[in-house]
Length: 395
Ligand SMILES: Cc1ncc(COP(=O)(O)O)c(C=O)c1O
Image (tube, rainbow, N blue to C red):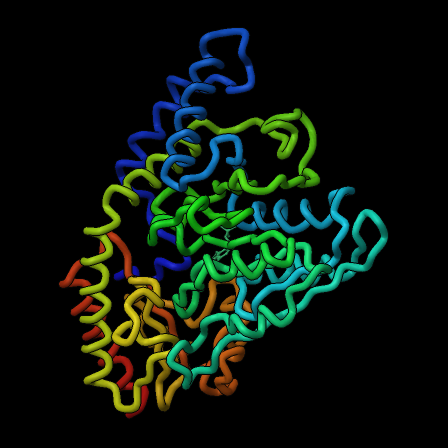
């Protein structure tokens, strides 16, 4: 199988596995047991890992909170902020193209009230339409028009998991802070693929998952604060008092060492990985575009603005067949018809619909995500299979 679905997940890098294994067997101490060396050794491994991650992200060390992944981090960031007794505002502003991990937390919050009893209100802003040069990018003017002194949190993803669009984070932070609100950024698709600098961008809350950057699944983190504003979160998981009471439960040194190793490798290899992946995407697009009549690109063209789209992302729309049929007819290539979550329900992508595509156009769209270990030969072999299966389907 040729794996071209790196927005859904990535394989663990063998260097990551090698780094984590001793923490499952030899150094297995409980990092919260400081009465013996086994525990202290595990604690040191965690501390070094979090020091290293904070340095790469340019975030204050004390802001790092380990979680079971982006979904939990997002829950802690949004619920934790809105539900804290000191939160006096009641609105959340987000973009229509956020991941379900944000949208569903927001839907749930919209049925609740803040600690002071104000019903929580969710305001969704749109994106530029598919025929706009910045197709799929958050509409910053719309955002500016709705953020005000009632806004508690603005939640905008750094990079979109379906069309790879990259948000203008610094401008969003400025708009947010002018209104006295805080910016949460779902950086799940950005960490490891783009330089992410928490202080320089002035993001307040930042969430990510290790399995999107060649680390293990069910491991992630939340950055709480960049030193510029005091943030208070109500814990969502209590018991044990770990992580300064913000998130209870025994930490896993093995997966934390793995996450930090994965982040260090991604950071060290960022330039070389990016340039190779850009070439592979160009190759895949050229092969498919020249062979499949009427193939369209969904989202911003990297030719017009190379910094507006994730390097490995390719989202295309077929003229005549549905993405699901193309996937079924090409079983040896792993790609996707939308986000991993919505593809199980076979719903047309909410991201493509938000860009103004019709339901039929959305159903005729697929997403490829090229990753670190893909090769030129794989891209050619995948293109051969995709073109052959498409020809069979159109007859
Ligand atoms: C943008 C984005 N946010 C959040 C998530 C949720 O990540 P996890 O399932 O690791 O919690 C994903 C995963 O697909 C994602 O792509």
